Length: 243
Image (cartoon, rainbow, N blue to C red; front, side):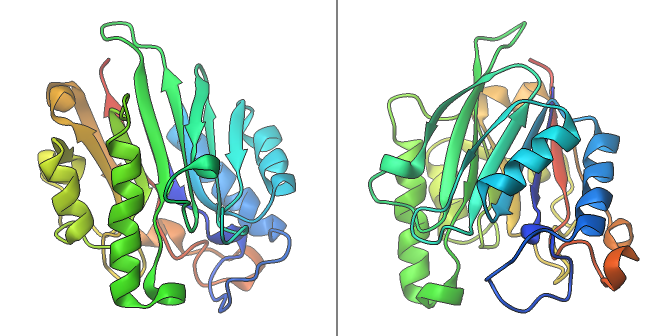
């Protein structure tokens, strides 16, 4: 099972200096969809979708069913999860605390293990909230997902924080492992700033099921599409699980 995660940056490409996107730039969307299809995901988890119309265009382009949820407080920070075989089970629409952006969980059948729950999450950044409040909100939103009666086996997305921060410490305290660390690839950045705010974490019980991890290199995100410098400010990353 291959799970791909990417902050699509509203399919605007870089440079794009506001957080008020219009429609996707078609050339950027086409280029990113080409990358997604090349990676052959069984699950495709995307962050920063501006509206349902964008989700519906993507569903047709990737040829997979999926589920969409707009941002709770900031509607343009929606998330979408596409899957070849699975079903949605929860999202943050009625979550407590109410997420600033959004999260959603899907359940996937396993052959060797029971059903695997995957959470696609986009945690708050200090851009709107300031540093101290953003840290508090990130941890609170994360705990609301991980401390549920049926927590996800895999949590991934844009955590808006380096792995060693409060979010990472919370994940480790609840028995999750950083897939990049497990596979010896924690040195690989996941955004154009050279940092690793996009992450994939798995429950410790799945450590032996990790078959591979990767992140698209920076040069693959350089594109001529619509004269953009980069297709997104984030790089796609993936996890291969043998379940």
